[in-house]
Image 1 (cartoon, rainbow, N blue to C red):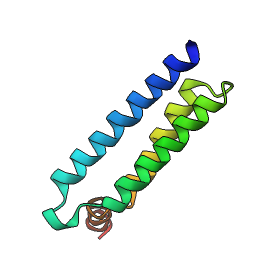
Image 2: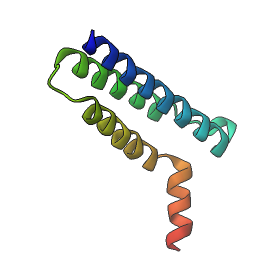
Image 3: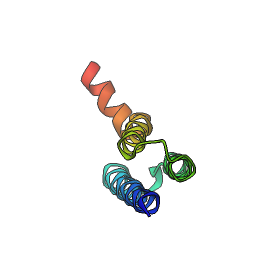
Length: 91
């Protein structure tokens, strides 16, 4: 039962993070520049982390949440609005 609850909590975190990423990118980019590839990578990565957590019970919930959060930050760093913001910050 504990394994199912932890997998559900991780799934909820992945879903909320993915939705917030999509909303932020939708508001930051123009209509034709939405990063569908980045969104797909985020979804696939979340599914992999959820399946690993469900398969291996030795993985702590905090480890899985932390690894997905770091993965989401890494994906977000390579989107066009963030790269443009970094370019203006450096120059």
